[in-house]
Image 1 (cartoon, each protein chain N blue to C red):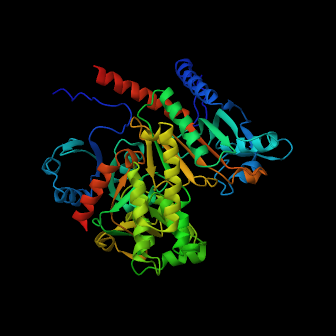
Image 2: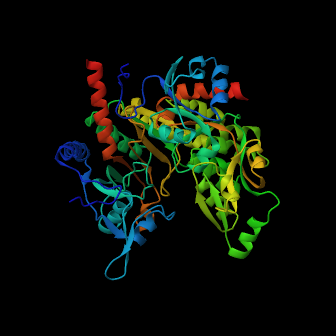
Image 3: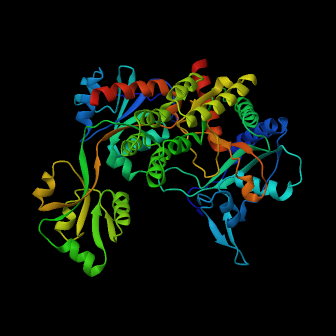
Length: 226
Length: 332
């Protein structure tokens, strides 16, 4: 089989059908439900296709990791995108318009530590700083700065629950939906940092030059998700 | 042997240099043709001078001491150095004063973001000409410059930097809540903005409606009507000012590429009144910006209104390349 020929711009441009970046992963199912609710046919994306790009109705849908959505939208490689507030908080220096709270994908950014264990408090009291493992180093650093505490933030990429179990860290800052993963690993929520839901974001230029299409999408999604 | 250069900087080789030089030549011709003589200022300024221009300290990402122990900084835009130049060297001159420039400015970067530390600004400053005529003249030059470099589809967004702060004042929103609302607005976070507005105490329904709807208003002249319907003195004043500028531009025949936009906010501390952004459908990044800064020159001891714009030369070059590609594709 020959690979498909790639045509189109070498740089992101604002033209053609509106490009929507969708997050594969935990938000994907509910995101597709929301698109169904505004009358788009998502069956092809629900299949086991390995494609990354889909033409759906008047939209071109590009799929990616949730944390890549702000990158594509900021550059204009996608006009609009859906991702979690957690991702937007972590990448708060990306210049994108955050235009709608989609209300699904609800979860909380929390500080967690070993259940019934005093090591987090002890670390703060006797060493002056907590060691915190997280996939969200900037949210964690900002949180401890704002609450006037010292923390040594350790960035990890994978299962962050492991860190306090083997002594890499005293606690973790992570996203929690049901709390089951924490409980299964003997961890408990100590502090709530911020709630998070899915958000619709827009490129700065698309928000202006394609205002009517962007606003139309916002209104349809607002009705479907409220 | 490979000898590295710092990340976020680059060498420009002959092919690119030839294109950039042509672009610069075209822009200088437009600027000079409109009476804006080209000036150059040093890349280095006293840190104190840059801070005087923008007290929020957004300026001067690169600071160092010279051999006398004075604190110097690399300029982060061209407007403050030109305000300094005008106040120092043209204090007795009869306004209005017109200057143009093409020069490098510097900013800090984040790794992995394809950002450059050094980028070239090309633009004009009109000192001593108040709104709306002064603003219209500057936008007229900007429009001529965009046409001259082949960006016929480029759009100029025109907003008012004062309208939202004044609306908040009118609604009695002050201090910490006011700071939080403006903070969300300048972060382009309309969801957070709605949360902050809903947290305000004693706000009328009309007030809430105005605060939430205003940042979504952008488009042609019809937007002025929509803003007018939101009511209130602050919105009315801004709408009248925008209409006056719009009419002055319509007279000059350049209203067609204008987008009235109530969501634009100042990203530099010295803007007052009109605020500009430049877009082209060929590129996902803004190509430049500008606006009025009627209080900036007073900080240098020269009381006069002023306006200007700046184009980011490298981005204009990219947009030009993409527009050429698109023209070839459709020509096939």
